[in-house]
Length: 327
Image (tube, rainbow, N blue to C red; front, side, top):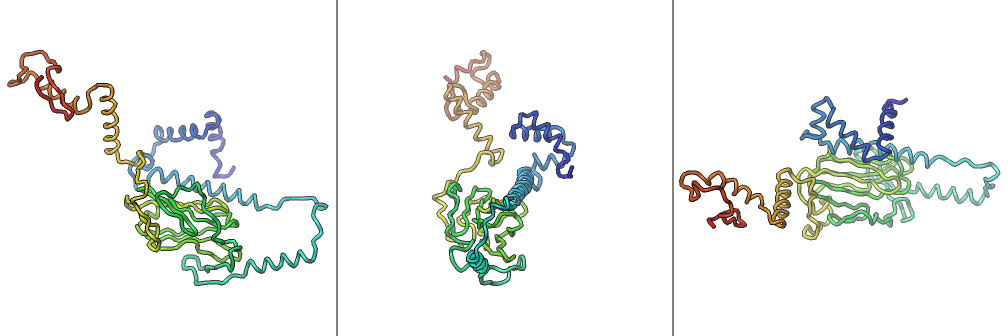
C-alpha cells in the first residue's frame, strides 16, 4: 500500500461505523484531535490563535486532495475508448485535408512579450472561435452581490476575504495547465495553450494587500479557477485591481457572518437575544438582575431605608434603564 493510503483500512473502518456519513466521520476526526492529540502546538494551530488558523490548514489539505481527484478524473476522461476494428470507418482523403487545415489553424497565433514568471509567452487568438473566446458566460450561480463581473473573471467578498472566479477554456483540465501567482499586492492567472505557450487571463495590482501565504486556488476542469484571497485588513473593497472601475459600496450587502465575529461581540449579541427573551416572558433582564444583586447586598446596611426589614424586592420599582426607586 502506498504511503498516501497506509491509513485507509483504519479510516474505512471508522467511516463504516459512522454509517458512511461524511459529517459524522469528520466530527469523529475533529473530536479525536480535540481530546487526544498529544501535541499542544498542533492544538493551538487547530483551536487556538496560532499564525496559521485551523481553517486554513483544513482548506489547504482539502484543496490539495480535491485537485488530485480532479486531475485523476480528467486523466481518465482523456483516455481513448477501445472500439472494435470493424467499427472504425475508412478515412476519406478529403477528411484528412480538412483535419490538417484545422490543426494548422489552431496554432496560428501571434506571440507577445515574455512572461516574467514562467519564461513563456502570451498569445491572442485571431477570432472568437478559438479556445479563448470571451463569449463564454460566467456561472449564474456565483453570487457577485458584493463584487462585480468582468470580461474574463468575476469576484465577490466578505469583510475578511475575497473569492475570484476566472473562466478557463474547455481544454484546461489539469492543475499543471494553470499558473497562479499571488503576492501581497499582485495577482496573475494564466493557462497553458497547446504548444506549451502561456495565455494570461488576469494580471494586475490589487487595490489592497492580501495574506498571500493564506490564499488558495483550485481548478474545476474546463470551467473556471476559484481563488480564495485572505485580506490583510478587514475592510470592504470597491474593486479587485486598481485598473478596474469601482463598485458602489453603498449597494453591497455589508453583513458579517456571526461565526466570524470577535468573541466579545458574539457575547454582546447573545446577551441582547437573552434579554429580549426575558422581556417577552416578563422576567428580569441582565441589568435588572445586576441591580437586584446590588439591592440585596445594600438592603440591610447602615443608612438603608429598609434596614431591619425582611428583603422584599416588590417594594422597589425597577425601571427599563436598570435604576430603581422606592415603591
